Image 1 (tube, helix red, strand yellow):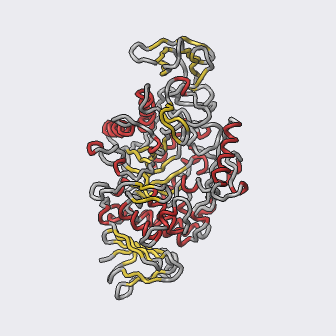
Image 2: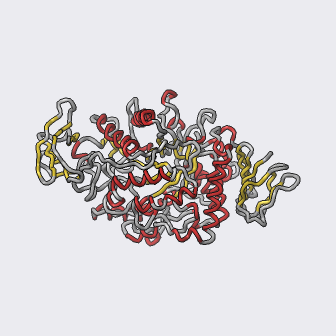
Image 3: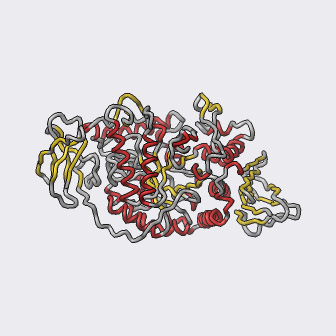
Amino acid sequence: MLFEVWAPRARERVTLWLAGERRATERDEDRPGWWCAEADADDGTRYGFALDDGPVLPDPRSRRQPDGPEGPSAVVLPDAYDWRHDWPGRGLRGAVLYELHIGTYTVEGTLDAAADRLGELAELGVSHVELLPLCPFPGVHGWGYDGVLPWAVHEPYGGPAALKRFVDAAHGHGIGVVLDVVHNHFGPSGNRLPAFGPYLTEAHRTPWGPAVNLDGPGSDEVRAYLLGSALRWLREFRLDGLRLDAVHALVDDRARTFLEELSTAVDRLADELRRPLFLIAESDRNDPRTTAARDAGGLGLHAQWNDDFHHGLHTALTGESQGYYADFAAHPEGGAAGALAKSLTRVWFHDGTYSAFRGRTHGRPVDLTRAPAHRFVGFAQSHDQIGNRAAGDRLSASLEPGLSACAAALVLTGPFTPMLFMGEEWGARTPWQYFTDHTDPEVARAAQEGRRQEFAAHGWGAGDVPDPQDPATRRRSCLDRAERTRPPHDRLLAWYRELIALRRAQPDLTDPDLATVRAAHDGSGRFVVRRGDLRIVYNLGTEPVRVQVGAGARVLASWDPPDAAGAPDASGGLRLGPHTCAVVLVP
């Protein structure tokens, strides 16, 4: 088999270390900076590369790291995995995403253990599972955003073979799989890529240090490295899509950006495989060009997260007004309810408006006639919005079940592609906290101290911030499935199932035309969203209200208990108790 590596920083030689033996490699005359060697090897054989007689380093394109990111790589031969399910793919329109972290979805924290629970998600009705990053990182447990070697799968999760079993099982349940990938930085421990070549550049800086080199000398190969990784997930592991972490941190001054190159390659692969593939961007730019077509001057990505919808919803439900929530609470037309109404109907709250939090104007308007609704992902909770709170507390820790039910309805009957965070569907009370397992003592101390300092600036005491290196922090973050069958969690779980089924049954709820969405509110807690012939009505206040929905209207779903949820009266008025909501079909 061929062993090859891009190592332009090797001055004289690159040595292949294979099963304890050293073998010379030769320069590839047709590809500057590449070194190659032919050798026989069995599946699982350990190997690595030494540059100019230095230490043996893992292969940058390693498919497997059995001993962690700093150990030797392992040969992964093209296997004869017998895929059990012929999968036609599932696109984004009509999708319901479910964000899932393998290390805390089950106590076991493995892909196989998570696969055993996929029946629960099929019963819930979600269309796609969105996995948090799977690339190798130090230790056993972590969020995955400190990963290195983005061609491999974290071994404690089960490695590449387990990922194929998980995807195959998901497809058997009719569920697509999306993977969160990190192209904007590499983790602080175990990153040996700079020894091989200019994977990073000091020309640009990011919150994590030097930027990934997308536009400097040598960047052609760095881009090819990331492109190859992305396409491998979609082709070899039969994934349905990728979520791209923090694309605003991909500093790229080239005329044709990396994201355009990536979206072009993914579209071509979809044509080749004859199944839908998609890219979802996490971006804080509020820029519709992210998902606009390439021939119209856009990047051609297929969807992007809508943080403004989350912020407006969170502020309206909780009343929080610190940090970036302050902009939403201060909306001149109805405070948080007005901000939520604007994001529901115009996508961004900040669409060229002034942001006091940023101290500048932010965003640009969305052309509602050109941007299908499913190109924006809406959510009430996510790994970031929960885990980056000091205590990792979920909405269910502060909201009573009725408001949690309203949050579910706003997401699942809203115009955007809905996304749930694992456990949200039953109002899980377990927190989801920031945890790490750094094996480098200096990096571990930096993680601990950085977390304390970050929240001390916001008034949190040291004892209020969980130690990310304490194993108990991860254990607290594991889901408790026993909650699913206990009140009030069981009722909320049934509500999520009902709303997802309703979303599939009512075409108005997946209508991509954003220009038809209407939202209205008043100071009493009444909030009404119009989707075609449907009215989704809310009482976010603490007193009963009456909402006018029209004579002859029929209630399709209501959070009010059966003895309290009546039909509209003769004049079309519907009574709503405090902290409740209903979906109504009007004639």
